[in-house]
Amino acid sequence: MDFLTAFPYWAILVIMIVNAIAVQFMKIDVQDEEKEKEPTK
Amino acid sequence: MNYLANHATVLLCMVVYLGLIITLGWYLQRQSAKTVGEYYLANRRIPGWVVSLAFFSTFISTNTYIGQAGESFRYGLSWTWVGLFWAIFCVVSWMILGPRMRNQSIRLKSFTVPDYFQLRYQSPLSRSIRVLSAFIILFATIWYMTGIAKGIAHLLQSVLDVPYIYGAGFMLFFTCFYTISGGMYGIMWTDAVQGILMFAVALLMLALPFVYVGGYDVLMAKLAYVDHVSKKGTPIGSGLVNFGQLTSFLYIAGIGLSVGMKQISEPKLLIRFYTVKDRKGMKFAMTWTPIFMGVSLVCVMGLGALVHAMVTTEEAAYLVNNTDEVVGFMLKKFNSPLVSGICLMGLFAAGMAALASVTLVVGTTLVKDIWNVWRPMPVERIIPRTKLVMLLYCVLVYYFTLFPPAGVVELSAFAGSVYVASFLPTIFGGLYFRWGTDLGSVASMVTGIVVNIIWRFGVRPNYESLADVHEVFPAFIASFVVYIIASYLTANRKPSEEHLSVVFGTEQLASQSSG
Image (cartoon, rainbow over all chains, first blue to last red; front, side, top):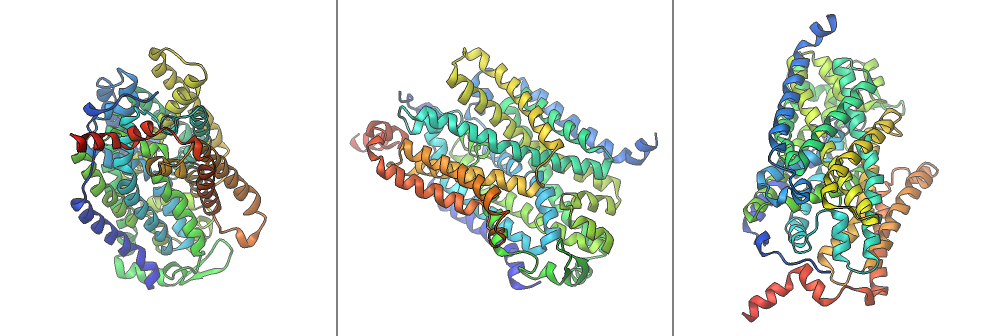
């Protein structure tokens, strides 16, 4: 198997790992539903 | 009697699986569907791990496990590049859209993607945006659902000798039945269970060609050079393991982008963000969804290429022209009723999870975004009417499944391209650009769908040099450019600052800093 054919297999694994690490360091802002605003008219 | 004896194990697996789904659906149905908010969005109280598995199982449908896996029989292991594009957009989807979409949908009290458009672009024209987007959803969804039902029908035909028309009908109407029963709450939990099963089956299916031929080294040696022929009749030779010999990278990128970008533009997936319960759940889903997705894609995207090591030259000549049948053929060739039964459960799960989600989106879109906008109805009629239109839409899809206009991969990619080109600028602009306007949104949607259709039916079939350029490229570029230009030219139609403060949550920041 040549390099470019094998590349996506490794790249997918690297993406999964890098993403998992990045998310641990991210500040994620998720609003509670209790604080929700009235809809605008 | 002979039939039962020959298929006893596979049928038993199917009965167990369908029994599990019915039981789960019945149990969940008792806990949901009291109000429109519960039926449509499960009251935004779904744990992160459930949303993560549901997102995975909804996106990775039979179009992937049967269609894309089979496609690599024709194009070799290079086809895994398509999976790489998908993995990238899975990360982008959760990173860029997930938290922001959930927060804005809460602030705007949005239940569906079309009503998000109306609420976000607030103007006299925004109701038209909602209805237009609803019609686009209905148009694109037909091809997507047809692709899924077609894939499963072929599989049932290969493994259980069920005639195509019965297999397609059973798949569509069984899924429709439990979607109608459970609403969003039922679908999310059922999807999660199906996601676990699909994940396991992806690993199992990858193992089959290796076990069949006697190990990794033997398999790779067989794939290194095969005496099979391609669809064009030319020898495949070493094309299965060498990049770009059997198809162009442009074609791979077209399918990769048009389907992969659905994760940042397709309502059945975006609506998942609405349902996440809390910050912890969001973080879990952002971490694990790409892992579920990535591992499964590594397993299935090149699976068809591996099947070359299991088939004769004559069988390969047939399969290269009928790639939707490759996975079913592989199971038949492996000749283990238990393995076939387990795989069939996973493949059924893949089809049902995607069909159920998209059926609910169609129902909510037709009733809340078209029917209720055209002629407002009492709230107690919304759920029964949603159930009715879901059933009718499934009948329509069944018709197209009996007379499919293309293969699974092409159908799915065309639907994806319509979503990407029509919705992505409006969604992304709505979430990030305060300067986006209603006219920018309408113009980009119309441009997206028109360019899609012209390129698909007018340009690709008639200009050989452009045949590999998927419609997603021109359609997406055109719609995004039109969104920017039209928004710039109609800057006076921008929603009020007060409204935008609510949309972007900036009034909270202002009050916090002043406090």
